[in-house]
Length: 517
Image 1 (cartoon, rainbow, N blue to C red):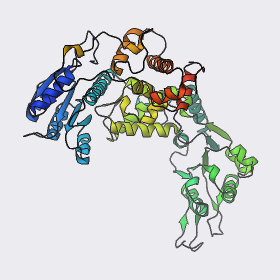
Image 2 (image 1 turned 90 degrees about the horizontal axis):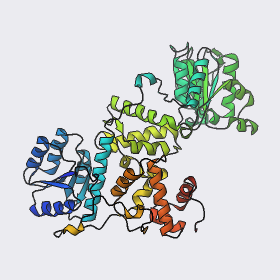
Image 3 (image 1 turned 90 degrees about the vertical axis):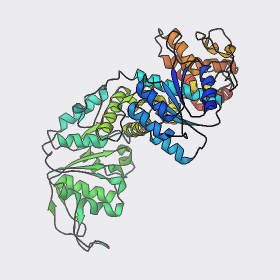
Image 4 (image 1 turned 60 degrees about the vertical axis):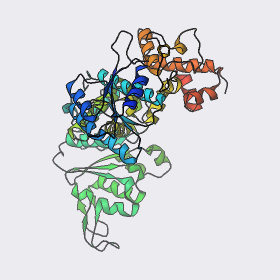
């Protein structure tokens, strides 16, 4: 069934292959779903059609042809229209072919001889991506990057409180303890305090206490004299001396050994240090900012962290909230990451589809902002065109957000063979998915395509207050549970998820608990 709504123009697919039989067979399969199929017998002819326009919604392009090769044609096509989606066809599934295909911007590639089911599924996915790119076309960044030169992004109430405290502590040299889970941006807060303080002209040095062995951290912080220990062939200036009149940031201070904690306390109390192996006292004027993801109060009770140092460091505390507690900020952080990637020329992606963004907002982000930044970078590299789509997100993120439920549940309709097709194989354009019709047959296998399900739900349920994606997920889970007599194990297997994930979604969606284990 065509992705288009009944009253819309059918999608146009261009098949470029110098083999007449391939063009005929592929055209018949695609036409069975009411796609408008165009043909080109060579790479040169196909490129000319694309440049002449209008651009097709999708192109199937053979790799090996006489004259211009498929990879050459792909480069010309993408040069003329960077957003054009192209699926390469090849009888030789070598690593080189796959790598070259994706390198030059192919949406995907498919092996010959064709499996009609895979051809239609691939066309469906590609056209869905094409539609998502169009829907993201009017996308506008929600931030002005110049307003976030600090690198800390957020409009949520909890982040506004963080910004206020940063502003309040910059006017003095008060010691600040920054707490929060790993990846929440504690160092960004420390840098922001330094940049807005009267010490901004001095050095800012960050030291990861967890990354330096205990036998080396004192030398790293305080320096050492020549010959003070084996390997100390020269005098070394430590971080505190280098940071004189500046700011030092002691990250993961909860991992610091007790012996070193004692020397840090001396710096705070008396403003002086001694190099390892030295006898001279050196005065230093350094502001100390510290951070940890550990429970220092519990460590004080366990006597693994000095109580007096704890109180010296914890004069003002800034607690960085985990990303799952400020989901309103996710879209802005994504925008900021994309802006930086484009600015640094690490990626060309400048947009994210609403569907993909919805998944990002729902995900719990155990790695917090750092994980989100890495995911955006990874997705921007993987994505074709100029938009991050749902398919570009890692499978584990989609699964954790429950998005794979619909894809794993809805099976494809009967696929015609490559023999001549009959009109009776076509599916009525306006028929809703039978598995979603209230009171209809709810056998799981008796469904139409995912595309038709989404079209139907969008048409019939868009007036509901419940989010469309959540409504679809609720419908899918409910229908599958009913079809399988409430058996959670079989339902989870049918949906392609773990039983624990299914139980969690059943509870979150309020579907009740009267189901078989």
